[in-house]
Image (cartoon, rainbow, N blue to C red; front, side, top):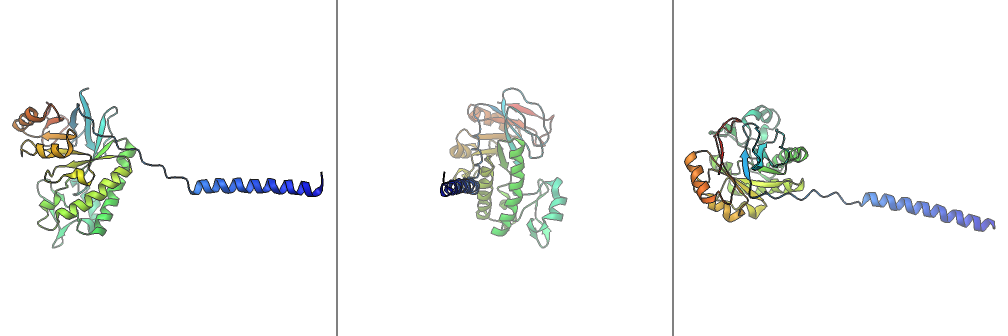
Length: 269
């Protein structure tokens, strides 16, 4: 073999190695980002338990469980993670005051309250504030997904109705769109909480959680938007009976005590 042949063979070998290395590097650079899992739809034909006031065991007929984001999901069930997305939890006021006071809605320097629950409303008036709040909620929703939850419930969509005219429906919808997108990005289905006047399905919500829809005769509005993917929670026995009679065959309906205590009232249709 000549010196030229040997040199050419070595050159080809080196070139091949370089090409392989470049190919591997390129594959790392352009490797597709792993997509989030597709959100699981809310199951039908099962009972639901609404456990925001504390966890408890459930009978085998319960296929859906709703718990606070800080609680662990229940294995073997469809788990919905509660997130107070438009107001503050009373127990988290200190954190909001010290870390995110600029994101709390204020009138004359004082926080605007939902007086029934003694919660502060969040300030969703500008795109910049909605973006900052959505970042907070996105972190919480990622935590829900990592914990094993299947879906998220976004509470107080209708906070603008308690804002003394400071917030608008348009702002609430704009903020909700951000939250829905963030939830879907981490593989969570998203539930519209109350506010029957809005067809949330048009902005991406996957199901609804309707408190007192029997009491206010609003169940039909949710069914028109979501079909059988509506959870009904009633707090008065007569409203529970009314809802069960008319919707119990198609929707999961539960009668709970208003405080949602672990040992409180719990009845299914």
